[in-house]
Amino acid sequence: MSQKSLDLRSDAVTINEESFWMGVKDCIPTLLGYLSIGFAAGVVEKTAGLSIAEITLMSLLLYAGSGQFIAAGMIAASNPMSAIIFTVFFINLRHLLLSAAIAPYFRHLTPWKNMFVGSLLTDETFGVSITHLQNKKQASYKWMVGLNITAYLNWVIANIAGGYFGKWIPNPESFGLDFALPGMFIGLLVLQILSQKKYFVDMMVAISAVIIVVIVSFFSSGSTGVMVAAVLASTIGMVIEKWK
Amino acid sequence: MEVRWTILLLILGCAIVTFIPRVLPLMLLSQMELPKWVIRWLKNVPVAVMAALLAQELLLSEGEFSISANILKLLAAIPAFAIALLTKSLLGTVMAGVIFMMVFRFIF
Image (cartoon, rainbow over all chains, first blue to last red; front, side):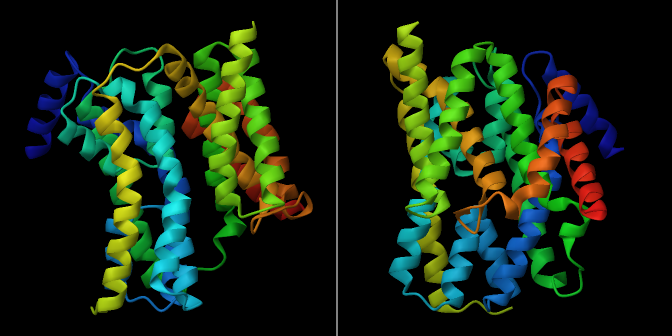
C-alpha cells in the first residue's frame, strides 16, 4: 500500500526532474565495492580497539574510507590526536577538487542545499554523478540526494557489520571482492572518457595521472599521490587542449 | 555501547576537517561565474582523479609501487576494461571484474 503510493509519486516527479529513486538505482553498481571496503574498515576499527558505538559514530560523521582506515591505524599505534586529525585532513583534501568539479552543475541550488550535497560527497558518488551529468546543464537535487543517501547507508551498515562479524568471516579476498573497487574505477574511467568524446586529451590526462601516482609513491604515501596527480594531470590536459 | 570522550573528540575533529573541503567549493564556486580556463581545468579533474585512484589500486601495495603484489588485479583489469568498453555498464564491469578475480585466484 505505502509502496504503491511511493511509486506513484516518484513517477510524477520524473516528468520534470530525475527522481530520488533514480538516484538510488544509479548508486547500485557502487554498493558491492564499498560494502567490502566498509566491512574491512569496520574490522580494522574494531581491531584498533573502537567499540561498536564508536565505529558507528565514526562512519556516520567522518564517512570517508581512506580517512577511517588511517585514523583507526593511527589510534592503534597511539598517535597524538593532533597528528591523526592533521593526517586525515590531508588525505581528505582531494574532496576539494571533487567538490569544485561538480559545482558548475549545482549553481541553481541554495548554499544550504549545496552544503548537504557536499557533505556526503565521496569518490564513488562523485564518479557516478559526474559521468551522469556529462551532457546535462544542471543536476537534479533529488537524484543527487538519492545517490548520496544510498551510498551513505551502505557505508554505515558495512562498517557496523565489519565491527560485529569481522572475526567470523573468512578472507573476503577469496571471492574476488578486492577487485570490486578497482573494477568500479575502471568502469567510471571508461564511461567518463567515452562520454566526453575528447579521447586524445583524456588518454593523456589518464596516463599522466597514473605515472605521477607511481612517481609520488617513491617519495610519500599513496594518498598524497592522488591529490598531486589530479592537480598536475588536469593541468597537463588543459595545456594540451590549448596547443591543439 | 560506550563512547570514550577522547575518541568522540577525535572523531569530531576528523569529521570537521573532512567536511570543510567537501562543502566549501560547492557552496562558493556555484555562486560565482568561473573563468573559461578554470572550467576547462575542472573538466579534466574527473578523468585525472579516477585514473589516479585506479593506479593506486592496481600499481601500489601498502603505498609502495609493486607489480608482483598486484599481478592478479592487473590481469583481472584487462577483461574489466574490455567489458566496460563493450557494455558501457558500470555494474557489469564490477561484477565481471570480481568474477575474473575470483577465477584467477582459483587458478593461480
